Image (cartoon, rainbow, N blue to C red; front, side, top):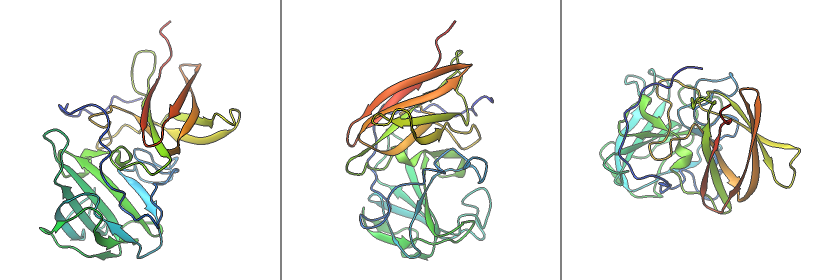
Length: 266
């Protein structure tokens, strides 16, 4: 276990800020990959993920998630938008008008097949700004959607699932997994069960890998998110310091619930 990289503390309102639209339309797939969410590496198969991947066919329209200004639109062949050039391929970065407290956010769309906007252009929420592709480093057509907080760089990412509006009938589970001393555990497995089938694992999640550029949301302080779950009751189980922990959580429609899993001090 490594100490979490130091991040500046931000004075922001606590709680929900899920006011971004989904970056793909209602007729297209709108949820991120369950296998490869923010802050994970797909069980060691992929690069550490700074956003969410939304899989759709090549050419599927992508949408502005908020009113704002396009501050970058083009290829990353010569300018590194990620950790290196030729990484995100065709990229759009939108700076929404709305902020969190006094801090701006930046929304990145990566691996596009088409770009329909230019830098400096004003856009409205829901406007088509490009299309799904697989440019840059990508395995199959999908949209990489990334939210950057306070600064527009690769090392200020936050989990986009806490920023996008919940889909009808769905919500999120966010939380922290800690050891007895209160230290965050990285890449730590969490088994998720639906209350209707308490003996069958429904989904497996992992806490964030601790690395530069991956960190908690300034308003939530989480180290894991289980996004787009159906409204209902779930059981979360994990083993910490040799002790099995369990928490039962009920997710209301359109809400994010927060849970802490930590063994009691001896």
